Image (tube, rainbow, N blue to C red):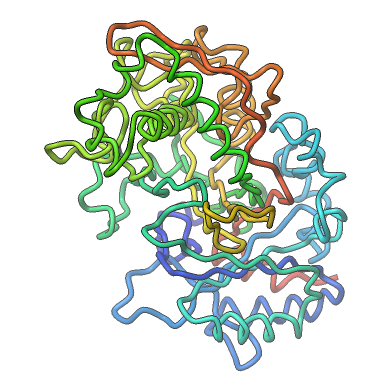
Length: 465
């Protein structure tokens, strides 16, 4: 039984990102398991004219024109012919699927699965999600045509990088990612994130929890070196977000301590050409997120989006005296080594986040109601202990800190204007509570998928009836 770590047995884009400008996610159904298996057999080998090659985690001398990877749902494993005995060794939350775990992760109301468009309205038919990354749209078309010969394409979701690496809310994204022991990533050479054990992302290795190894599904060649992904289509209500920044700034304009949030004599450090109202809008955005919109951590530069001396985007921690609010989105999702109720949990719920924006450009001078947002992948070795725990306990309940318990994440949380609140921090230790923000991000589809190793894809391709 092989239990040695071999980077080339891991699908690409799990431990190291591709950093391409375009992505196309194909939502697939297995109608002919023989054709599907033959496709996988060719794809896991060197590919053919009718089958793209599965991209492995290797260091390229020459970047390939595109990268191709697959995630398989529980129903997809069944459709490919995986035996019931082996299917039963997969975790409960994966077997249930995302739609049956909706309440746990905050997908209710307008975000409920019954409101998801096709093909996610028929989760039992979603068998695979194949992802193509490239810088050239023609490559996406080419690979899709090849995949369509073996699978039924139920739907397509296209994503792209926005200028300067931002998302539609205006924040620079993708700054903080896990780094892994035994994995050399030249793109992460200057990143100050702590090193995570391989068991954070891959099945079969130690985790940050002492003595805890997540169960590896059987047989070994199917489960070992695999990972899980919560694939999410997340609509971002940009109009509502920008309107709330107006509302929050209007509230702060009447507050006697507003000068502690934005120094009237140094508004240029928050943004060029801003008046007090415009500066307060950016402060609200920065505290809600935990970063200024240009990516500068609020913890290291609470008074300036453009500090006089450069600060690290990743090398910081939280304390009881932190200016970054305990309820800020980034602090909720990744409390780092800061104070939380369950201290042992600080780094145990780390997730790999991959994502690109979808939808048309947004013009703040001419706002529209077109759908736009993020195609996100939240990758880890255990869906329940990582993704679901973050979404339920930290994002939507605030259980990590009694000062925020009962309040949802201001950006990602399942908020309503009638009950939402958020405590902004002041340098004198006081806080200002703001209210009334709506839900800003809505689920518009998704699935829990298993990201099999290269050996596992070969195993699946060799299944027989």
